Image (cartoon, rainbow, N blue to C red; front, side):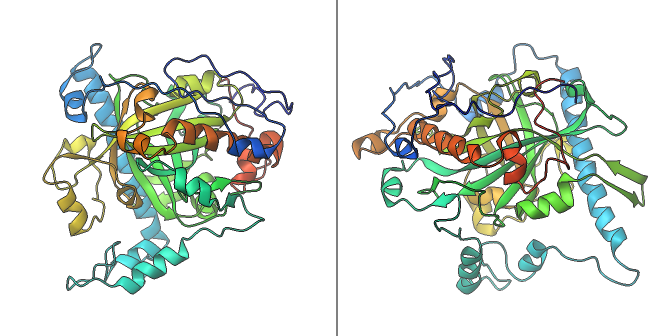
Length: 432
């Protein structure tokens, strides 16, 4: 990608004003004198909206600028191309296995042969020991040297309608034979990674501990929804994985042979933004993915074209794999949801998100553009118990992440956090 802007934040200790964005979370991108300020940030004004439509009504209404069959065909083609990539990757894994040998099973495959992800055995009995072992293996290592800090006070203040919080990364990958992308049309795919953190944790200095709880999402449309009229599908391409595994087996480019398409080549991914996120549930029973970017310091042309903002959010819902849909918009394999999860859909085609759903590969989600204020509004229950609001929590998390990345390696902080040297990947691009 062509010229870049600075990806570092101003090292000054002077506070910078909040961005003037009426539809965004009031992120400050501020730089206080001490880290203690992160624990004493003032309360923000609460702004709520009760006019948010439900998921069902949003799905029923057609976009005003819909190009009918032409636009739908384009969307379906993009999803089908993404689905074919999943098939090709699976073929590549099989081709790498020696003749007469079975392809190596992933850890998730081995773990689900006798039990599903909830510890459910084939005979219907629950194996609680395996569940406990899994929880222990993914439990964050909280100590003075790591980025994740224990905060009992923070735990008590977290609103109950925050289902998950964490760090989010945005990536793109160029189309085959495109050396330098000049627009969204030169991209093969856009991706994002959700890296969950303990709900009551705060971010301190250093890189986030590398646990096997990351999720890689593929966005076939390549751009994120920019308004309520935009409803784009995405899916979990990899789940229960570490950043190191993503670096070794996904971030880097590769060339390999397939039985159906011969030699295939994929370019390395290009990081384009980093930030923090919340998954929230509002009183109208909808779930939302809200994020605030911390890198780059200023959103550029690349991020704007991709629909990445300083602060943004989407209504997010999960597709019931038992309900049929257009073949061109379906994946070749269903997520291995347990019987209990399937029952939670209650026969509906779409359901609100629970974080455990996203821990399954091939889980399909729908992202709908929205006004960010809706995603971070408080609930009456949390107001009654004097809890923080989601808006205050994401501002606090954003501020902590800004301080954290300042102490990494400046404009290469995103690479340091992902264990990627600056020699392996370019700096964060802000212009094509």
